[in-house]
Length: 229
Ligand code: DC
Image (cartoon, rainbow, N blue to C red; front, side, top):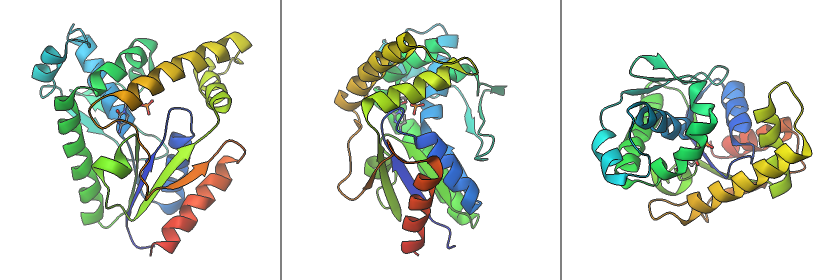
């Protein structure tokens, strides 16, 4: 298939990561998780002892950390100043601070530039790339050949996230309820912030993943990519 960019947006728990990784793997393409880049920046802010809600300090600091994304959809990695933070960026302290950091426009300007460079680099290297986030179809790569917006019902999203967070243990009803409330708070922050809020591009094809298997969603995205040849 001709190398191209597949841009995917959607809220937390809509299935973005699994779908994007699966699609990139099945096409033999690169995968870029832009949420991981905002998380990595948040990790660096916390490590530096900066208050994530102090926009001026974060803005002054944000050019310092060197953030490097790995593109392997089977083993996505992210490194900050030589430290592999792939696991650390999923910790609760990062999750609860990431909305504040990702709302700061200097942070977004910097990371958006990096994301566009990664996408262009993939095409220059003769390969396609699947990029996931909140503003990929609207701001970062609005000219992507394929634009997808993933959704799922709130209870399904909470169940998926709670299961992910519980790891090998099973998620309790209390876990699911707490996750649902945390997701609602984060959705609200992500979609009401001034800088590039999560919005659905009119041009993006919406897939409600609530009642679909992962393979069905991946197949749907691949069909869209084939149609864009
Ligand atoms: O997809 P995720 O939950 O790992 O994303 C972490 C946070 O980063 C999320 O709260 C919103 C923000 N984000 C963003 O503002 N823009 C993106 N392109 C990707 C993520």
